[in-house]
Amino acid sequence: MNTYNFQTADLWDQHFNNLSCADPIFKSFGKKTAFWGKITTLKLFEDNSLVRKQLETKGDGKVLVVDGGGSLRCALVGDQLAQLAINNTWEGIIVYGCIRDSRIINNMNVGIRAINTNPVKSIKQNIGEHNITVKFAGVEFIPGNFVYVDEDGILVSSQKLL
Image 1 (cartoon, rainbow, N blue to C red):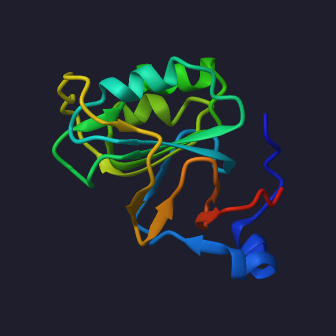
Image 2 (image 1 turned 45 degrees about the horizontal axis):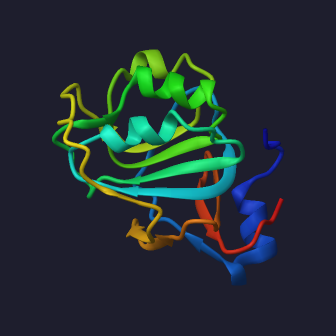
Image 3 (image 1 turned 90 degrees about the horizontal axis):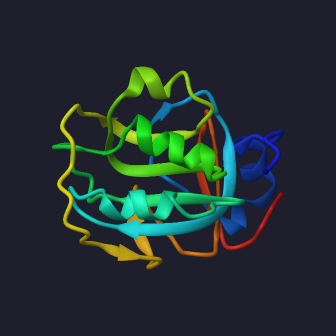
C-alpha cells in the first residue's frame, strides 16, 4: 500500500522536467482522494469485460488506466468493480470514460478518476487490448511508468518519485 502524503503541485515543482500533466477533464470518485502507483493499461470501447478480469488480479502498488475512448454512452466501472479493486489492493483507477453507482462508490475506500457518470452498463464481448501505451487527456500512459493523482490533477512520470 502506497503512502499518500504527497501533493501533485509539489511533485511538479520538484520534477517538472520529468513529468507530464493530464488535461483537467476528470472528476474524482471514492473516498481515496490521492493515490499513485505503477501504470497498467487497458484499451477498449464500451466493453468492460477486461476491466473486471484485470481487477480480479492482484493490483499491489498499481493503478489501472482504462482508455475507454472517451465514450460517454455507458459506464466502464461500477460499485462491484470498485469493490474488486479494493479487495485486490489496486491503488486506484483512471477511466477515460464513465462510471456508474457513483453514490455508492463515493462511500467506498477507493480512488477513481473518470470523465463523468452514466447509469447504462457496458457490453460484454471481451474485446480490448492490455498493457499497451494509451494516450488521452494530452499525455501518454505507458505500462510500467508511474502515475500520481490527487485533488489537483494527474501527473505521469517514467520514474518512481515517491
